[in-house]
Length: 98
Image 1: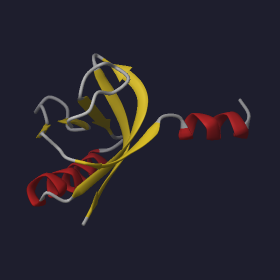
Image 2: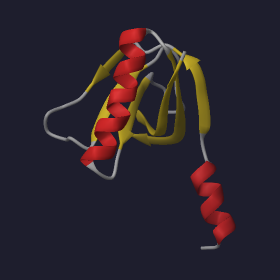
Image 3: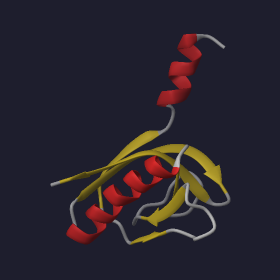
C-alpha cells in the first residue's frame, strides 16, 4: 500500500462540527471505548457513535473531552470515519470548543 493510499484512508469520513451531545456512555467491560449520541443520523443509519482508542490513557483523554462538552454545553466536534460497527459509526477524534 502506498503512502498516498494510507493518507486517503486516514482522511476518509467526515468532520462533524458544532453538534450537541444527547448522551455519553461507557461499559465497564471495555475501557478502550465509549459511545455517545448526537441528534443527526450517521452513515450507519443511527445517531450512535463509538470512540475506540489504542490505550486506556488515550480513551480516558477522549472521554474527558467528550464529558466536558456534555457537561458545559460546549460545542462538540468529531470525525465520523463512516465505518460501521454494530450500528455505531466509529469516531477517530473528538474536540470541545467554546
